[in-house]
Length: 203
Length: 114
Image 1: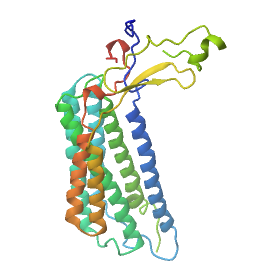
Image 2: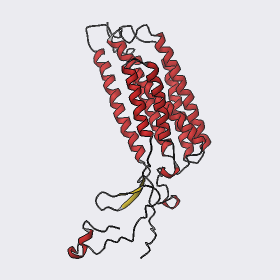
Image 3: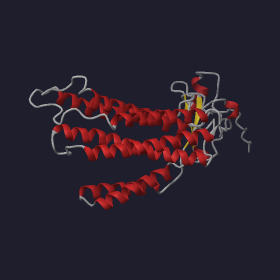
């Protein structure tokens, strides 16, 4: 029997180039989730231009909590970016610190958002506007919660030494998702909190 | 190593010089592996590591179904517990395993290969 010769071909595992299959999967998740928020925000703008009722029904919303909270979320995205830079230089401590800080800031964002919900003078069933407000911000909170779970898992896995310069795909994929959550909040914040100050509304 | 579209008829069709050989090629004996090839020429480009058997997807389906049933029947405690269990199962399912890791092609000389 002829002994098979050993292969001398060296191939990358699981990906061609530096973009892994998981990276592409996350990209398409972001596209579909982005479409979801686009539809929801379209519903808001459609409602805003209807002439029959006053809009927003309860007047413009205060920026007292939402504006600082926006900066908290932006800071968490910066922390994730800083942490992701660390894995490219094999600095796993920097990765863990960046993702840990991002987790804390994300948790603060959720806490402040819950306070903001509690302070609202309307409920989910008060009007179409209030229903949209809680639906959109609620969907965003659900995405933040999923992101917090990802950040926590990546934080623990980094401390356990699962990632390094060559095996960094989960870090990049988690970072992309968190930046997406941040970008969606900017769109939500602009829509619900800023556009009424810019003149989108009547009555 | 398959060298043509018609491995069994290469001698008669005589389309190209290369011949299919069964004793040459990637071993693919390091777990469940498949080769990623280019679309037209079938040139090997990467190796995909496939995960092995696991009860976790089935358990996840059970907990997700339970959670949604809890939501439909307004049993919030059931939905909550099953939801938390689902999160735990997802984390267990995607728990990193070095042998399945996707490795970006930074430098082929550094990379493990199957």
